[in-house]
Image 1: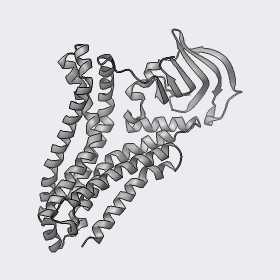
Image 2: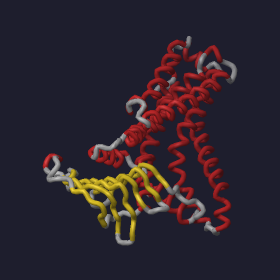
Image 3: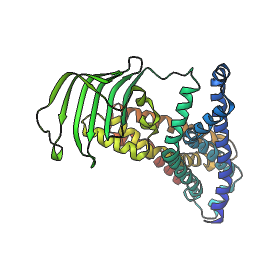
Image 4: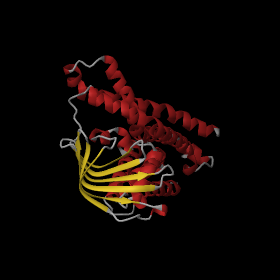
Amino acid sequence: MRILDRYSVTQLLPVWLWCLCVFLFLSCVIDLFEHLDEILRYHIPVGTVARYYLNFLPLIFVKASPLALLLSSAFVASRLSRHQELLAMNASGTSLLRASVPFLFVGWFASLAVFVVNDFVVPKTSVAYERLRQESFRGRAPDERIENVAMMDAFNRLYHARVLDLKAQELENLTVLEHDRRNKPTKSLYASRAVWTKHGWLLLYGTIYRAGPGGKLRGEPEPFVERLIGYPVKPESFIEPQSRPDLMRYGQLRLLFIRLAQTGMDVRRYAVELASKVTLPLMNLVVCLIAFAGSTQLTLRGNLKGLGISLAWGIGYYLLVGFCEGMGKRALVPVLVAVWTPHVLAVWWCVRVLRRTP
């Protein structure tokens, strides 16, 4: 790494860490004020509150890191431009595209950190966070109707339901896919309704299919009107963090996606979530490039217009990511196009701006 690269990295890293700490602190303070009435009403111990926020921090880190990088990169790049340090680099033969490499290095480092935390830490801490939220902060009740829930049990069964009604303790359009030890499907079951009782699940108006070698249908489908089955899951199991696609590990979500696809159901929502497991960390890299490109235009040197432009571009990038992912989940465009288009467009635009800037 060259001296100029080390100089830029040492300028950016402390500012990013400082912005990240501010975002984490403000998120905890805002959430604390939202729960303050419940803490006082239920006399929640200080230790419980501390554990709650310790398990809350990794999730906030994943979400706040790109925003902190956008703000810190825009600030540092604007300062370098305002003090004519980038002009000196350019005069020595270093192009703006080359000068952005230290920012991209920090963005890549942040991307790796976010991926590791999101894949290895968040799934575990979210379990404790949700448990404390439901047990201690009793004023926070979960949603009564949740769409598209899925989970796997210890017996290699995959459950998917279109709607979970917690108040009625039932599932709508339930599909259960059983696998052998080699993860090949052996039996699938569909029920229009599944009602939880003290004796197990009462399945209504469904069909059972049995699979033979190669996944081919074996025998005739077995329709039924009512059937009581003791599956080792409860309605509350479907709202645990490990059952939520956005909180699953990449490998778990990929396995869930493959097995749901075997049932023939629409898996676009899960495909978008799977792709987002990769693109979410990469947003740290992209926002660094956006902030640098917007803040270092030499024609804007000496004022804060470059900083404002980079922040506006970053906000537009965030809005485009959310809009495209929504279109992908609604099957308006192919999943890969919906997930990757905003990131490719952002990188293309920034490279174009940096190359054209004198």
